[in-house]
Image 1 (tube, rainbow, N blue to C red):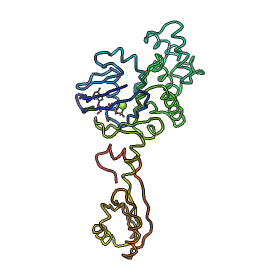
Image 2 (cartoon, rainbow, N blue to C red):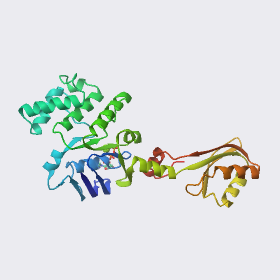
Image 3 (tube, rainbow, N blue to C red):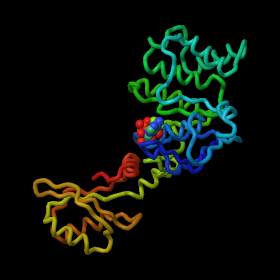
Image 4 (cartoon, rainbow, N blue to C red):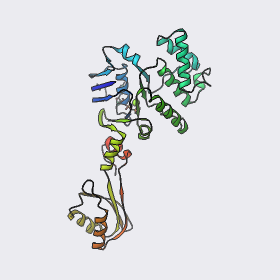
Length: 313
Ligand SMILES: Nc1ncnc2c1ncn2[C@@H]1O[C@H](COP(=O)(O)OP(=O)(O)OP(=O)(O)O)[C@@H](O)[C@H]1O
Ligand SMILES: [Mg+2]
């Protein structure tokens, strides 16, 4: 449904996109995940035809964005990052205004407005002036305007930023419902957002795609990053020398120490449970074993790992 190929975009002071490629299948909800400044908004503005790339192409449905900007805009409903709505208008006035821009008139227009008001749960607010609404309801108005022409695709740029926790839950639920019928690209810099709404994730950092896959695939990758933790009261030099010499330890790192108790993260060969070996080793060496457990790297850690220069300790 959307094919993004090798997008590059440079601003006067920064390279925003450095060869971004990904695709979105029909019916999919893609979480576009990345930290501040990663290039999410720039990518979305290019997909929606509001910004021209230096290099690369975007195809939406049948259409190339640069060659057929109007057709592409018809296929897409876009909720930009700063939700540009007219604060002084009433909700119904604003939706009427956008519907007319979208070329809707008469009964068709009225039906479209009714439909989006129902979809976004704005029934009790449609006569209110937008500036008097809570942020969550303003965001619903933003979503409603994106839905007026009943587009196949929704591009939502950080739709829950700045909302309080209960509003976040409601907007996510709404997006999830919309995802049953539409193809959605949803940008966010927080992982839980994609965990609750998206079926697939593309992670962007510093203008480059650093990982993509389904949540299951990324979780699987996280499992490969499984470490065994061992806490010992023992001479740390002795322990580390021993760790270096046994064949079933591939890597280890001292992660904590206090009052003569030390903790290591230990990696064995892939897929092998090394807890028993560690237990026997401790007995053999007469180390006091205080704790021993396995821990998977969480998706959160993977995200941090992929998006920070220095791997956090
Ligand atoms: N109009 C512009 N002029 C100059 N630099 C820009 C412009 N728009 C974006 N940038 C720069 O391009 C980079 C990518 O910005 P972009 O807004 O796409 O990131 P983002 O992932 O949306 O970040 P955020 O999570 O903060 O919204 C940043 O370094 C930003 O400063
Ligand atoms: Mg942004």
